[in-house]
Image (cartoon, rainbow, N blue to C red; front, side, top):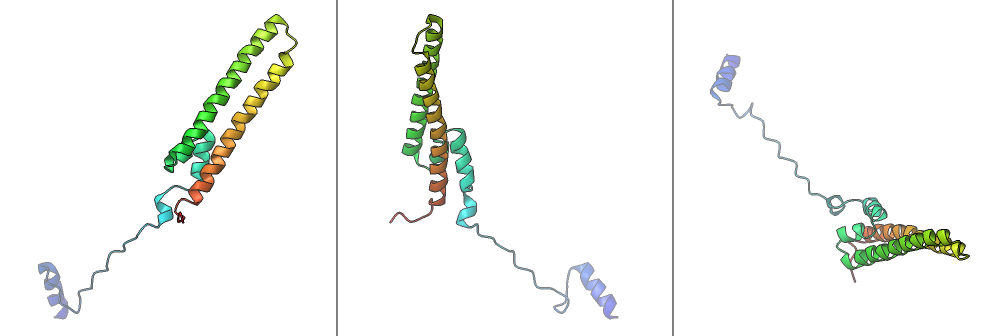
Length: 133
């Protein structure tokens, strides 16, 4: 008899209190501050690829601008030295080795700019939510 009443109650949509289950409250997850931004290695990789990109995404536009400006100057000087090497090779000048050394110096500065930009972005990302005081 109880089975029949329970079946009828289920069909009609009326469930007695003894059978009804209390609903499970939904689980709300609040994102932690660290999960709302990318990892510091992500910013390091961005600035390693293009100096200033990681800084710009951390809203450090002046620092990023300085890194990209130095990148432009060093790249232009390396290209200028490369063009002068071509001219010195054609003329057979004695200054050829000096100019090759100058080009190498500018290329090394380019590599260091990438590295320092990446390291600065990594440190800035780690200190992003650190109080300014």
